[in-house]
Image (cartoon, rainbow, N blue to C red; front, side, top):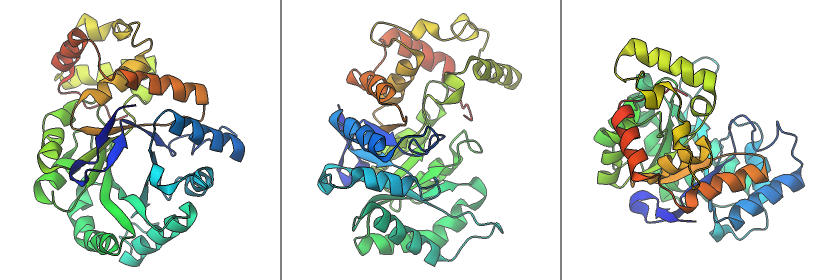
Length: 314
């Protein structure tokens, strides 16, 4: 496993990290037992993973992940979780909600510090309001030693061109330690502004879901090409796109998934790439892609030339 740093913090992080949310909710929907979840986490750590990401509103993922990590030396892994600002009435909650969420997460993980505390899914319409209201509280919690790093995740389905991360990196680079966004073969637009700004300011980028849905499902890929054809920014009728991406498969990248992870990890502005699965074999396959985290030069050149403006919402 390769290791990079979480931006200006200097904290080492595995190039691949484990995501305990998503559709499986850390194996809950797949029917994993507590013992199987613990084996999954143990295998992830055997493979070199040292960061585990989840969220307070991913069902009982925090509790389950906390139980799976119980008994493992605390200094051997990093916990990243999220607090959601969303309420039934649509109004922003009191800052006490954030404080309560941090303290609840600490209890669930049986720890006295959360390594990365993130605000979940900030929208373009409320970035400034959320930052003004909650950033001071997060900084206070950081000063108290309850959290080490402060971050947020973008709402990728509503902001595929990363307006919120770019705004944050321009307006408040000293507030945010980490930003979670989506960068991959079909989501390269972050390389234009967001990733260079993050490198400039020492903000760690946590890369979420780089191979999810569109890259791996042919019908969704075809729908995306139709959408891009209408928008006119990408040459979707180029044979390297029109006929699919199977040309990326090589001995070193035996699947499109492997190619996707290699591409996602190649950019130096990425601190870690989050992968999530409830299957040990799939986990091992995913991590194998990071043993040589790059694609052949000619493949990278073609992808960057054809898809520099790509911003798939999923």
